[in-house]
Image (cartoon, rainbow, N blue to C red):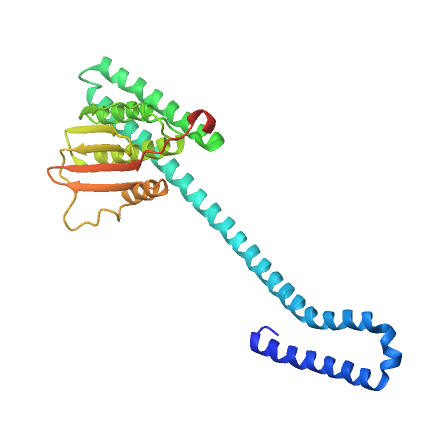
Length: 279
């Protein structure tokens, strides 16, 4: 009986009838039952405790079943989340490299008749970029290796300059006391932001700043392009939404300002952690 009121009612009837039977038997056959008194006492205790034991065991089995279902659901959600994360990372990595290849291809086509030597250099850069992209995808799929922030700064500079923009950097890319997961998240966000600038901003300058305080890491990336349309929800785009989700995963946040261009700021709490142990 699952309902507590029904269980208690039946339990009271069960216990009362048992006690009445034992009492009646004692009254009429006390001489014959007196030697069996210890057994009767054990029986009464069993009558008192057994229904509760059965009920609690039933509840425990129910809870164990619900826990097993919840764990199975959590496992499914973790698989889905991991697939989405891998898809975003692959999209960001390939998107950046393919954008660079496209920009350098256009530049090489323009220089082919005017400056053949520079065109050959751009073609060689395209070849190296394609090899780098293939290597990064293989590393990501096989080892899910994180990206260092200082390495990502170099890649961002390459893609910005390949788009014939002026790149400016301020700060120290070698962040200290930062977990590899946080550094990887910041690198991915920076990569996606640079790709968006090249694709949509029509800017001439891109500026990246890194500030690290005892409480947080702040990375800013700004451009002097056309900015975001006033009627556009900034988080409806897949890229910005992906950046916000990654930052929220490490308790960070994304701030957007669209005035004389677009400025993105990544705020992440500075957690002290033993990096050697983590590696």
